[in-house]
Image 1 (cartoon, rainbow, N blue to C red):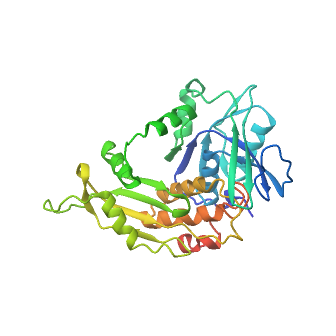
Image 2: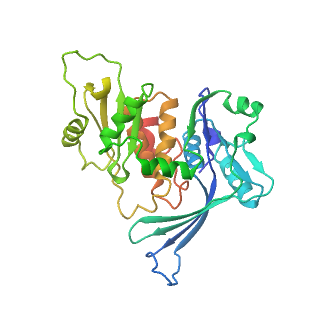
Image 3: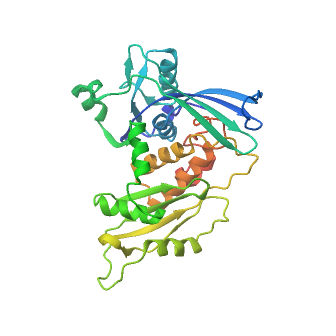
Length: 328
């Protein structure tokens, strides 16, 4: 498997990611142990992790230039994580290194019996702070960047938002609509649904007749589900017509199914969401159509699930599984 830095697509803008890096200690077990039990692992791997690092590794392997702004400790784990990202083609030259401290790390237990994974995260210190970002660093890291990916820097704040349920919506489709209503400049919202695929609500500029009545978003979702082929092994995309929705929103709903991975090939779901995000970033930078971008991201996420850890089986752009999208 060659480094994607040799396969970068010339002339494409840069994807910048800002977030935490951590080191994943992955072990597979025949079944999850009960308390006070000793058990033998069946395989073990140490690999870089963290949502931002995983997503950017995916972007780099697909052939786009990517750079990361993060903070690591001046320890062996921190140096190892940066070297691994560099070997995958991610530019780490803008990362901040703390003198002292400790890097984040994560224990991941993969249960071969149930195909589930359990994560135990140990936060490091110190965090990336605004004082770390000088004006010259900000100007340099943003130079040529088209897409910025950030997943939140405060776990406590993110947990609080999740508990408060920002949209106060009772269903997933209505939550997506609520976000478009509250954020009028937002073009689309995507929600991943694990083994059930994903869903996108896209704002459209196409005019609809003023006489057209508002369509209930939940009824639209149910109708769209009825015409979606959930039995397909490969991801399929189904979209509604552009319609008038509540809150003066004109848009369409899109459903994409997940790839059905045979149990003999399903190894570990760690990082599947990050792979999906990395593929979306690629699709945005290369101007993929919405339906193609979502189906592509679903395929990339499925590739990730076929190996241990978040980065082991992230595909390069010449992967035959992606030939239908990238012409590899």
